[in-house]
Length: 295
Ligand SMILES: *[C@@H]1O[C@H](CO)[C@@H](O)[C@H](O)[C@H]1NC(C)=O
Ligand SMILES: *[C@@H]1O[C@H](CO)[C@@H](O)[C@H](O)[C@H]1NC(C)=O
Ligand SMILES: *[C@@H]1O[C@H](CO)[C@@H](O)[C@H](O)[C@H]1NC(C)=O
Ligand SMILES: *[C@@H]1O[C@H](CO)[C@@H](O)[C@H](O)[C@H]1NC(C)=O
Ligand SMILES: *[C@@H]1O[C@H](CO)[C@@H](O)[C@H](O)[C@H]1NC(C)=O
Ligand SMILES: *[C@@H]1O[C@H](CO)[C@@H](O)[C@H](O)[C@H]1NC(C)=O
Image (cartoon, rainbow, N blue to C red; front, side, top):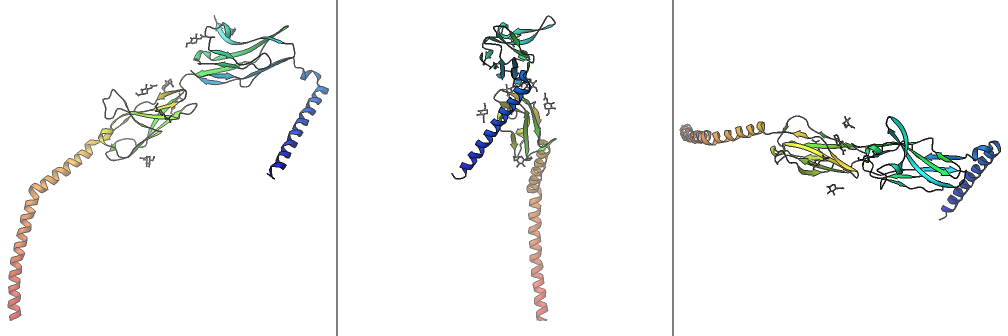
């Protein structure tokens, strides 16, 4: 509590200084250039080159000022190419006017405009106009609105390229260039299904396959989504090399069978014979030992 009092004091002081500075500046302007404060009229756009996506809504912020009397009428115009010449057409004269354009302003200084369910052909120059009793004033500047259609550029990167052997691990990473950024990723794959249909196999930006099997072979694609729409990456082919590993397993299998079927009896017989021989040897040696010891 103690610390907050001096803080607000400082804030008030700063505010007072700022206000005094403004008033002083206005006074200087009034004395030096009497014409500039009474500008007659003006139209100001907050942003003159907005960008928006097809299907979305955009708000063109705009303010105006006039000292030429009461405003009787306001209107927005669009630059349209008609028979090779550019004309400014009132939005209310466009066939798409209904539910598409919405005047957010008033007759007192706000001239905001909203455009809903944007189409690519909404791209263009927009002008604001107001009428007082005596004059019609149209903004010299315009807003140039750009409406774009492929908002999502989606691609997949594989952590491993080339042939994957069974049991190895692979990560598929989905990236997308989108505005606003994609916030939902879904993975589809043809693996384990017929090649014509894709099944959902995961979600999240990374699809991690820690131990691949032959059944993971197939086409993979990633779907990125933001609140405005979705798009798919191109399909990437993941190939799990089953032949080499299978051959190894096959060879090991044959080896084991050969060993059990042929080698093992031989080994057993050989071992049995060896034991018998050594038993005979022992017997003979023990006799020798006996002979020596008695000698
Ligand atoms: C713009 O395209 C839409 C369909 O995409 C159409 O309904 C509309 O009339 C077009 N507007 C103009 C001014 O041509
Ligand atoms: C989806 O991506 C394709 C290929 O990159 C592109 O041609 C298309 O316009 C995109 N569509 C959308 C709705 O983003
Ligand atoms: C999409 O992304 C790829 C790779 O990042 C890039 O080469 C390509 O130019 C991008 N396309 C568009 C339309 O942004
Ligand atoms: C895949 O990602 C996981 C964690 O996300 C990581 O532990 C693993 O090492 C990665 N594998 C490869 C092959 O990059
Ligand atoms: C992502 O999209 C899927 C499919 O539409 C949905 O079920 C899921 O809830 C979404 N996840 C997030 C985080 O928005
Ligand atoms: C992306 O792929 C999925 C699965 O095949 C499909 O349902 C969806 O319509 C595709 N989206 C686009 C924009 O092509």
